[in-house]
Length: 112
Length: 119
Image 1 (cartoon, chains in turn orange, blue):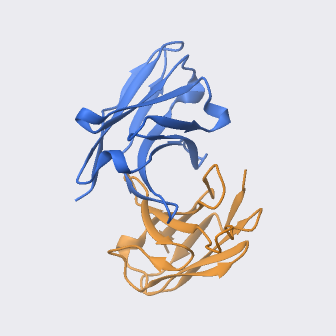
Image 2: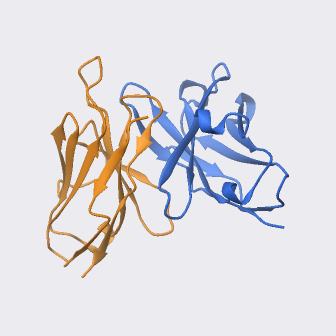
């Protein structure tokens, strides 16, 4: 299985600040078809995860451009700018390139 | 709009079985894989398996072979997961999630079902 390693485990941020979360995969996430199926999910307290970004950098509907994804191969980053209270929760990276789908352990974003 | 409505929390005894449901609405149930994912505190998200309601095909994470059984009822647009021979290790929140084939992501999730295994 592809192992997804996220860092840091937790982050403290001030409202309006900027943060970056790193995600590294144990194997390249480039599919045979040339696509890279790396997604980011946000799980707010008491809720189920929700899709935030897919195919490395495409934002899912409803999410602002304050969220941006980048990376290639095995190294990926999620950046959140101008952090708002509604951004707080646990962020997971996930891969859909190889079966089974796997997820990182999560990064908890908290207020400083 | 797409919604996945899961059944309520379960408190079950060790050694027993439990069947949880996931009722889909707002899309063609038979056209999308439905996946199941386990979440334990501190253990992140773990993929269990999927079912394609259109023909009943299933695929499981090897770890859950014999533990989880996935079924679907097309007439009610409901997916089910039965967990058997329950132990404390099965205490977790279980999510159903729709898979978007070709994009290879989970675009909609149920609210989750907490299963507690305790005597």
